[in-house]
Length: 386
Ligand SMILES: NC(=O)c1ccc[n+]([C@@H]2O[C@H](COP(=O)([O-])OP(=O)(O)OC[C@H]3O[C@@H](n4cnc5c(N)ncnc54)[C@H](O)[C@@H]3O)[C@@H](O)[C@H]2O)c1
Image (tube, rainbow, N blue to C red; front, side):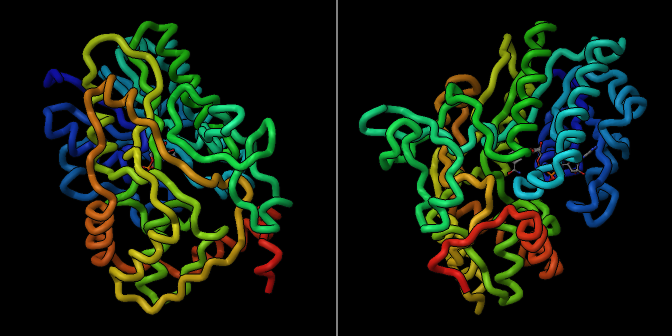
């Protein structure tokens, strides 16, 4: 990386953005951030002092064309992180999610194409998401690799949470999802991330510049927002455990996710920014391991020696997926990097950090669940009805 690189990070004040900024500063880059300090995530509209002194900050919305134009002056590379990120919330704040995630990206790409400073940008790295796969890849004994449809409400109401083969309705086993799996998002958030990624890669290909769609899995670690009740299961559970509040688990608790530690995500992103040679495409950024939600709740409860009751409620959110595990072979082959932080170590780092932060309003999470319920986006397994 040449010392002259000036990198614009949209959404750079967020969880991934701050860690990424520190890593890129350490290698001698100039960093500019555009961020509007979304109040759902941030407790203050400023960067921590130790970052603020080294970074040029534009406090603005990415959809403000004039601000984005200013942000592009002298920039060689872009990391586009700004987005609204709540899967459940996206199912009823549809206009807002499209506006920020899709229109915001369109404004950026329009300036990269039409603005004299934008024309000088030589690489764009976009934060995509595993949400674009929906349920992802499964194996059917008869049909081989299959990509299940959205699970039906009727099936989940009788406790059948596992997806079925889309061809023969047989039981199937989940397997690692690779980048060649089809787009099949099950949430508005996932759909907006799909459009965002496709727009970035189409633009990069047309302009002949490097373009990365980094399909982050569930990113966790110190620094993630503890305030946002709409996303971040580790943050939500740790907040409830610290306040000895019941931890309510959706479905039967066996649903699982691929948790990838923040330092690994930052390393993959830095390698994409620094990539020498031509690349336009998508890469999964995950740990390649899956962890069940109930295991996480137990580990967090134990860590805090909490009196929280772990309740498997049988409730479910429409738009949630069942399991997730990333195939990370393309990441390894392209960036020569395998995320290596073991979940137990990463979780310990996160919880040690979270224990030193102020506990968040415990009513906020309940409000986020009540919102989903009021919009008809929650279901309940009949045998668990109260
Ligand atoms: N954290 C994860 O688990 C995860 C997983 C998959 C994908 N991603 C993607 O990675 C990116 C970064 O995620 P994060 O976890 O750091 O999220 P975050 O919410 O911590 O950071 C997002 C930042 O974008 C800013 N922002 C939001 N709307 C904006 C707007 N209109 N104009 C300017 N700034 C705006 C917010 O203020 C925030 O600082 C997002 O695009 C997200 O979709 C994250």
